Image 1 (cartoon, rainbow, N blue to C red):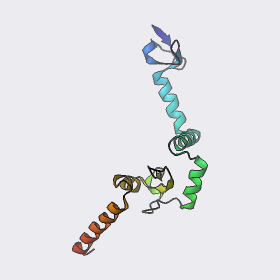
Image 2: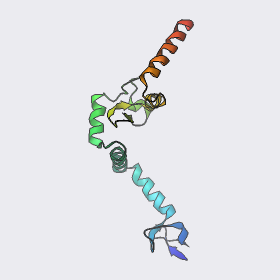
Image 3: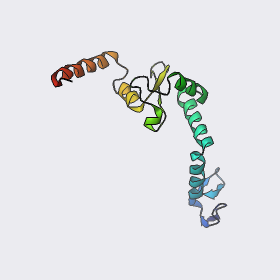
Image 4: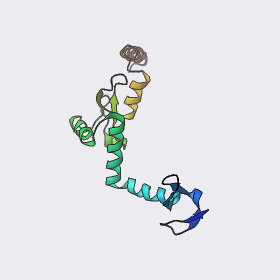
Length: 140
């Protein structure tokens, strides 16, 4: 079975179209849909909408609250102080995986580091002791 794409006007097999429900297919082919959505996501409105949706789904935060946190932190990671403009992407929302409490905004490296240590303060302190012991050896 074939269908004509509303956007590119090419007649294609229906497998090249996304289903809108069990009986019908969307008006534009998968390729045109991806192009259209890609262009939209590159717009300011698309970026803001996507960011807002992700923040709400993952953390229950609005973009407005994220931006307030960002301003309070002067746009810097709370651990290492790197700026979002230097990173080239947004700061990550750090939260406790047990309570869900939002702690602050961190760069990806610091957020992953804390995650690897499972938020375990004793392990992080042991890592600091370990690094300091080698600091003396190197004379740094």
